[in-house]
Length: 382
Ligand SMILES: C[S@@+](CC[C@H](N)C(=O)[O-])C[C@H]1O[C@@H](n2cnc3c(N)ncnc32)[C@H](O)[C@@H]1O
Ligand code: SF4
Image 1 (cartoon, helix red, strand yellow):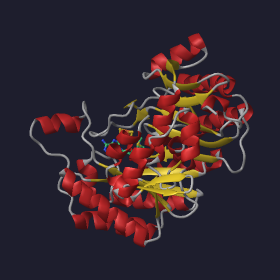
Image 2 (cartoon, rainbow, N blue to C red; image 1 turned 135 degrees about the vertical axis):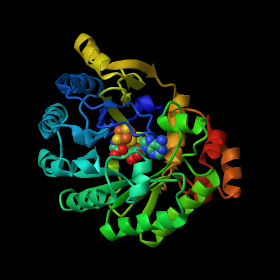
Image 3 (cartoon, rainbow, N blue to C red; image 1 turned 180 degrees about the vertical axis):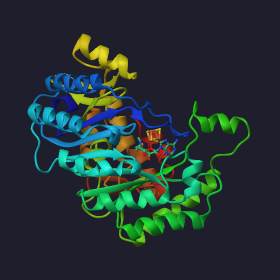
Image 4 (tube, protein in one colour; image 1 turned 90 degrees about the vertical axis):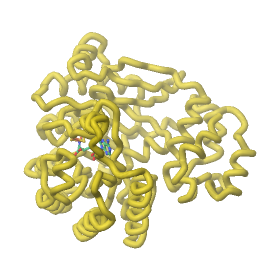
């Protein structure tokens, strides 16, 4: 059975990209622009969703994710409008996870977001240390971050916090202090990010001038081990390479990516994956907000790049994404997607070396395997 012959249409995740930020952080290379009000963009997103309904057919929507950029800069009436559109097109259940990425400084809007239907808030805290926050170019301080978490905890079903580690000058005790505060505040989900120096960012330019912005890779690896050890002791599930959750608080939306399910991608630069009647498509929307809105008006969708995924590339993507999660991948599904035999020899070798583990149909990366995941997956690609 190839993926195009899958009996049940997969459930659907919906990603909505809001590309504006109050200011651009010196390490960030996402598709972001200085904040401005953009009523055209909300209408374009709604029209694009209507086009996607035609591509997907009727599906059960398991999650909607407002990502960015900084979607906490959106007006709650616009969030409501978009959610009503999704409800009209596909239908929303009470179980649908509706998540929004928020900057802590926007805490006064949280109540309105909850009223609009947001069930999960993902807070870009990064650190509680004022000197680190200044170094990272953030516009909040540690106290605001704490207040934002406390406010959110009373309003949303799940609160997730983004934590950056590996900024230059960070010590183990700095990191321990951030983790202590997170634990004391009782957040249910933590996404950890190793500070990465991306091309064409202010940090990359500073490093070229000889100013260090990140610690060494060895030090970062030590920080990662520290996070993992402490959160495991506290009962967090390390369910994905960089993500930790209390039971029942995993990100359903991100799981859709890691499990190889379909997702709609609307808004500037958003990526999508969708099984149509004939093919599985990978899509990328126009990156610039204005071009995106113009394209939606002209074509009734915002897709700039549309590629038919071959069974091989679908299988490779399934492995690359699926081995990131503790649940791993289904060997039967992998074989069905690829339509060919699996690389049994490599699988056995990696199991013997302690990098993979097999449990009936499931194949998982061990903790050692996760530490060298790219090398492992390279050997498994079809
Ligand atoms: C799209 S942002 C979401 C939230 C919101 N825009 C914010 O930053 O508060 C997702 C996360 O990626 C992190 N991130 C972005 N660029 C990074 C980099 N170069 N290294 C490490 N983390 C990065 C951000 O700090 C943020 O927590
Ligand atoms: S890290 Fe978040 S707030 Fe900063 S520029 Fe990137 S998307 Fe915007």
